[in-house]
Length: 283
Image 1 (tube, rainbow, N blue to C red):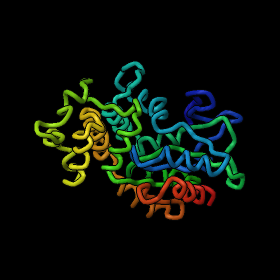
Image 2 (image 1 turned 30 degrees about the vertical axis):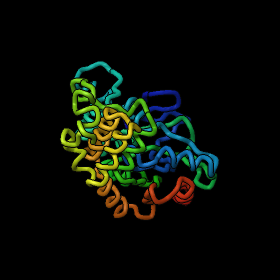
Image 3 (image 1 turned 90 degrees about the vertical axis):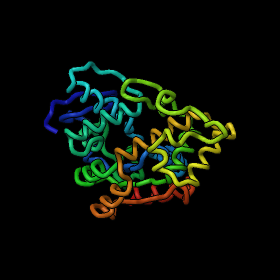
């Protein structure tokens, strides 16, 4: 933290903190760990309803936009440019991780905020959404001594269904050439019914035959467009390539077991998850 201070956004910066600013490493923070569709946003909403004093720190997406992607673009000599395609973002964050151990966790640890750290006794909870994979959580466990880690998990087939329901404009994916999902795989049902799984090799590996049949049925019944299903499967598959949830859990349980919670959001409702997060954050 010896770099010259630079303000990234209102109240948010990196480098040596000036008067009235505080390093994120000196703040108590609840870090949500999990890939897309495990229920992090729902958990935060439920926690907000349960207790006051919730302070949402810039999330993973925002942090990548402010720090990670511009840094990699700078290495390439390219001007800062917004990147929305999920696969391109995975590439940028992966390259950042190659140079900076910890990836997004390294970027997060560099932050300074224009406010004083909240005392745990005050009931305030600073939340960061979030980290993924072994490298990130290992770095955070070692470098964020006041952090608690809530790992949220859900089966991949459930994650796909949640992505289909939430209709987030950010949930889009193309290849490095900017082509749409339509050009990457069949956009809908095959002749005679059924989604073309043979054109989605990663999807076949992720799901059981029963799960594939379940997802195909959504297209057959007209509940979801084949292009959308293909795009969501591609997102889940890309995250599986980049992040190993099981490895992250093992690392946290070994390194900081007293600061780690693992919750399956398919067996615990939002209120139950919020209660567990509240106990962890105020421990």
